[in-house]
Each structure stands twice: as C-alpha cells, then as structure tokens.
Image (tube, rainbow, N blue to C red; front, side, top):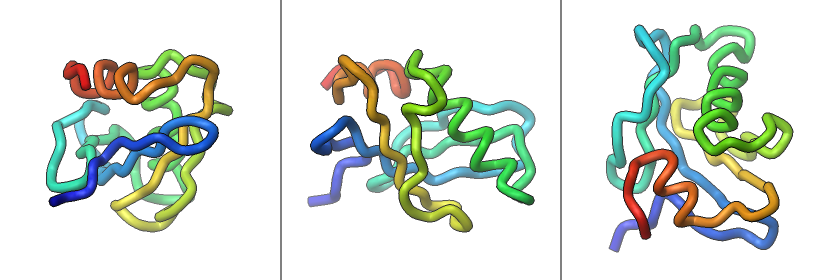
Length: 102
C-alpha cells in the first residue's frame, strides 16, 4: 500500500509534494505515487521556489502564508509541508488541491 500524500497531524495537515520549478504557470498536476505534483512559476534559486510554493498553497487553501510550513526537503524537489490553520481538514485540502473529496 502506498502512503497517502495528505495526512492528519496533531496540529493540522501534512502534505507530501513534488515540485517542478520554472513552469509557465503555477498549478497542481495531480497525484503521483505518494506525492502531489505541483508546477511552480519560480526558479529554484535562493529559496524562490520554496517561497512560491508556500504562497501557492496558502492561496489554494485560503489560509495565511504563516499557516504553511515546509518541514522537510528545502533543497529537494520532494518536500513535506505542514498546514496548521483553524478548521483545516483532509477533505478541505483534497478538495482545494485536487477537486476530490475524501
């Protein structure tokens, strides 16, 4: 069984993502294996792609940027994100990012 890309944590939701920088526009591609694939319209230099990822996820989930934290993989294409915001649920994250309910 593959691990899910979206799971609950004590304070919120953990999301496993795989990013592709230097895209024409920032968008969610879909789920591949155990990660959510996201294209980012940002270069992978000086943390620009990380900043763009945090902004993109905060916008998609309608939460403040401060609620989105990259916990693992700062210099990797594979990253672990934690979203801590009141009322955040796996269903809300799945629906906002992939259009699917749980």
